[in-house]
Length: 356
Image 1 (cartoon, rainbow, N blue to C red):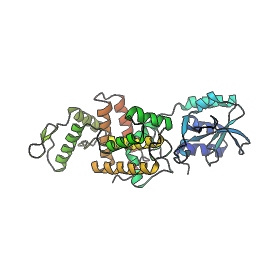
Image 2 (image 1 turned 90 degrees about the vertical axis):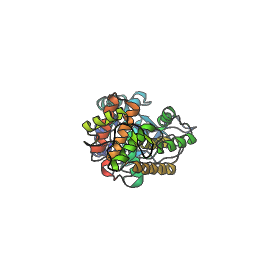
Image 3 (image 1 turned 120 degrees about the vertical axis):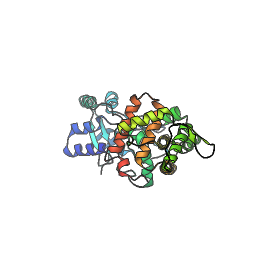
Image 4 (image 1 turned 45 degrees about the horizontal axis):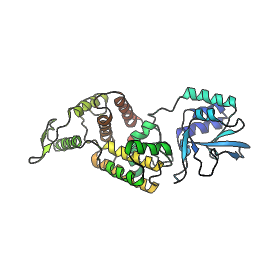
């Protein structure tokens, strides 16, 4: 079975002898070009006996090789390749030597055709649910990776992949540096521990939500204002902004009619999985360490929530408090889209995987 739908479309077009279909299958996709090692030529040109000529090899996402500490890839598009192609007599070898291979002529006229297909396909959009059929599909590792599915869906990369890259080596390293101030393995581990400990969500709001959830579980009437937890212990008030979001969540189907958010830490758990995947891409951790961390993220999520629906609502509220702040603007619309895909699409891990 081809690892993703991209390889399936490419395989089917090749089987039909459909040259336009081959280009169409990759026109809107990210392609991956090997980064040359020190002393190697800038372009990995090679002679391919399958076509009897010189080729430049690229890989589709699902055909990236397993993680190697010194093997990196850059993302390129058909448009970039068409514009910078060095020799009309060379061919573009897509996934050479695999069942999903295609060899595309690259004369000027052919490259103009690539650009036409790219114009029709457009830039690969975010918000696409992608499953890698060679990745974890069951068990604790898959459950942990599913906690990071909102980030994977946002970037339209496979949700169940722990491998060579999240986006690519340079982008993953820049994400860690710019968004998390992480540039080395020690910093990566520190941030991971903080995320697994739920230390990035607002502490007072988190305490209020958990106290309210405990009261509800005990059959008490939860008070939206300040109350008491035991003798003299102040319980923080649930912020009015939270109750506004919960009301909107009920109207939009993110919560049931009587639903409330139990905790915000789903946001940190999702980011922990993202941090692991970015760390792998930036070569700040190795696969065994990454797998262990992802399984831990899944276990922490199960300590805080009882279902994917509860996790989803916690993630959505955490994201809104961090990035929307009551605007109900584009961030809210995006969160609503991610929620609906992950809770309604039959191929979603939140539909197919047990939470506990």
